[in-house]
Length: 203
Image 1: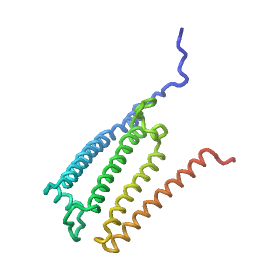
Image 2 (image 1 turned 120 degrees about the horizontal axis):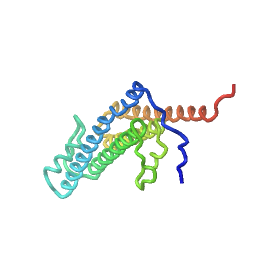
Image 3 (image 1 turned 135 degrees about the vertical axis):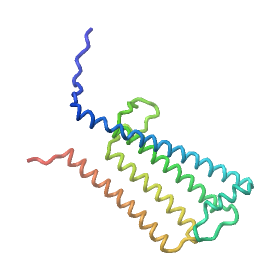
Image 4 (image 1 turned 90 degrees about the vertical axis):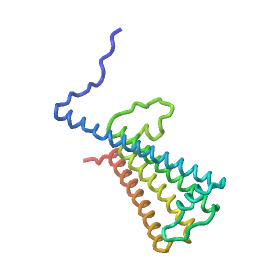
């Protein structure tokens, strides 16, 4: 039984167009570099976690490292492991995880969008958002991730607010709201583009 001819055939590119299109692979070292950055974050996460466990078990050097990590510049240094200190360290670990998630979105989503298809359709571990990823979706996802990271930083500041001056608190809050407004503007712009695309004006 003969095979049916394909409905579409790849258009042959001219040498110049082929060279320009192939230049997208120059981004490969960038994504590999982000993978190395991800490894650094994993190492940092485990160092902080091991020190937190060591401090809880009474290890003096681990406790000193943890207290130095949560100390505010030009502010009083904590003298012991308290609930607030533990909370600040845990929020720092959550911050690392959220930045790691952001890296994954940039690496996987960016590679899928701008370099080459990964053909993950049907894979049990395919991220839900990757099935409909494009530049617009990736941009919105990144904006939401940045807001989440900013929220963690702001929460850490508010928990330790007694050691910060009012100007620092005010500017961190303003910057967080700037991120929120930026994400809303991105979402609104994408919505307008989508509406215009699906409902073109009649001439």
